[in-house]
Amino acid sequence: MTLLTIAQTVAINASIEPPDSVQTADDDTAKLVQFINEAGQECTRRVDWSNLRKGINVPGTGFDAPYDLPSDYMRLVRGMSVAVGMIAVRGGLSADEWFSIEQQMGTPRYYRMSGKTISFYPYPAEAMTVRLQYISSWWVFGDKAEMSANGDRARIDENMIAKGAIWRFRRHIGADYQDQLAEFEAVLADRAAADSAERLP
Image (cartoon, rainbow, N blue to C red):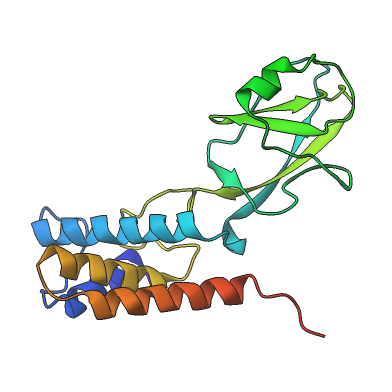
């Protein structure tokens, strides 16, 4: 499904005229696009989708300085998301704990996030690499964080996005939306479980 076909599906379920294009000045169409983007962003925020998972190597510099994260960084994946070789680097230090540590160079054991930067203790030597796995905010093909053109497609299940937009539009127009919200939650849970399923023997 594209943004246009998602918008048409949502419109039919909200009992409004399906648009021929999302790139118009029509108020209903603008709301359709808004609710579709809100649904896509919610789905991205709530689940670590495999299609949005990325890995980067952070090269050590030999200096005690924070490292900038990619522009599409949203959050670290759950589990062993920061590692040196096969050794996990742990986070969770408070600001007070972090700033009480006397920095030194070595193999990182802890990290601290601040905005879109990450710091390590000990800080890595120039020849050392730290591996990070993160979830990208670019849930739309073309390295985009929202849909805007008729042909835009999502990196996550578009039917699920449509269901998320349907209940939002129905709520907006004052129609009953509880059944549609329950359906969206069920589909989100099903897709998330399937996406993270482990390989069976």
